[in-house]
Length: 156
Ligand code: 4NP
Image (tube, rainbow, N blue to C red; front, side):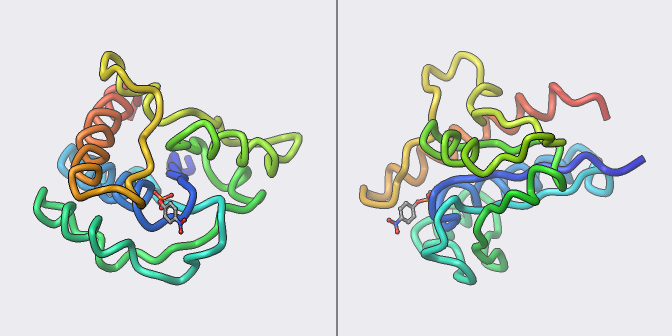
């Protein structure tokens, strides 16, 4: 059977979705499921394609035990809806931009990532790009909760 595949998507693929990819991968490996799933991230915009994550997010993630340094940004494409089982949007704008490129017969289920962070009081992962360092840690808190919820929901 093909491995279940997860794609995390934000706007630039340099702040929220790379840390979601890194945190989810870390937790999947800790759960002993490292060889059972496929994980990637992408941005709806092409501005940062080929770049490493934002240095502020690399530093915040490193302080919390996650290594994002080898990730590189790419843009989400229609083919992703055939290649992935779950596409996890960080906010509603990402969600609607993804709906616009979604083919008629997708394999992927498109969801808001924080649907898996029940009780956290937020529905969207806020964009930290134009704010202070606290925003980056808040993103990590949210993606840790949602990653735990997503892993609990899986039947692997
Ligand atoms: P991300 O954050 O969507 O979490 O990667 C952003 C990154 C870059 C920009 C905006 C948001 N930007 O305007 O370049």
